Image (cartoon, rainbow, N blue to C red):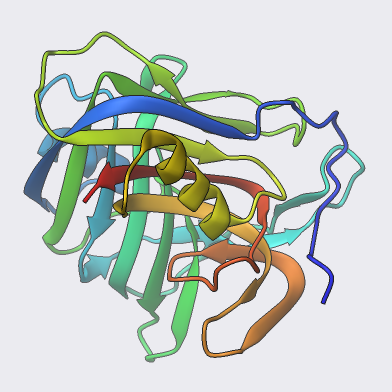
Length: 254
């Protein structure tokens, strides 16, 4: 079967995988209600945190706004977002993955999540960071970055502004080896990460955080999502899942 692929309107960049060395500090934090997700993360992380990747646990949110992946309505982009959705009642978050970084010098985040509506209907999508409000405490595991940060920058190929890892001044952490990574369109998620590990001489690594999209999806059990705009939260089959727009994550050596 031919590999699925996407053609974006801009020129294809020569750099397909960004890799920046980083030290990680793991923290278990509790996000407090009455704040947007963005506000709650800023408050829960240590003062001065520039960037982190996180996994979120369960909790209630309301108001709650999100978008879904969709085809673009203009030639400016190959794909885009749906119109905004607003939940009519509190939702129950089950899990989420977050990239926390900087946009124009201010905190920002990228979050894909899975939740249930008030009637139990399952949903997933791209949360709007400043339009989703915590209605209950929410636990999170954070890996705070030292020596690198995810920053939103213009991307010529996709014509989006996207998180990319950049080197920043280190606070001197001596935590074990890790790298902040961004995968460009049409790079297979699994084999690209394997190549990073080989180049670094690592026998294995754990993915921390991880937010991105693929051209459709192939699962290990053989199920497939036909080539369409697909956001990712869970495990993918090796060699069968090319990046759609972007994929940002941290790899930590085992």
